[in-house]
Length: 264
Image (tube, rainbow, N blue to C red; front, side, top):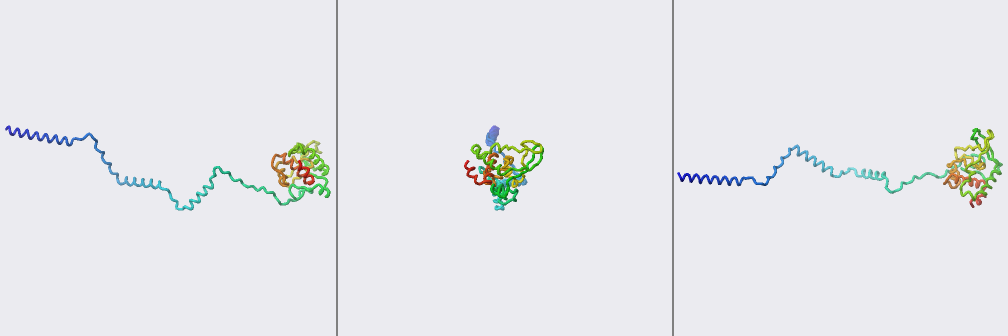
């Protein structure tokens, strides 16, 4: 009986030792175990992911134009349309050449050339000693035709120019810029008969306005027209162009006055 008890005790001790060894081997360690693997995606999801990656790759790749020639032409057109920074815009060349065609003779004392009249000697030889023109009263609106004596008026203007030339400084005298008009024979209003100017520049009665010292009634454009076709300066203020117009008509009437006038 004692032997059996020893055997039992010996067997129980061996069994307990095996259990302890088993527990020590299979006891979980302090470190964490790796996470479980991701579950595999279903086939449909995998296909969608592949398509999305393919589209992103295509977007990143440069688009090749099947027609490179057309693309180059369009690029050149865009470059031409874009303004160049720092460059000056090319000026548009205006046609400012003088008209060379002749015109119908507007008056017996005018030639068939624009803004040109006959000389004093020629007019006297043809019996043209008075120059007429149309005027209108600023008050009663009556229209008249008045005349100026060619010789008397021309001599008076030349004497005035020679006397005042040194004071003018290439500017028209106040007497020319603000002309004094004749008295109206209808309403007897003084300084009232203003010349009637033709709307067409080629039909302006230049000699009549000159003898009446009424060229100041012309507009700046009309004075530029005269200076343009008589090879005079046509830049500057109106009083400057008016000055050249008076001198230009003096030279046309008597070319011998050119040295005297040009001296100033």
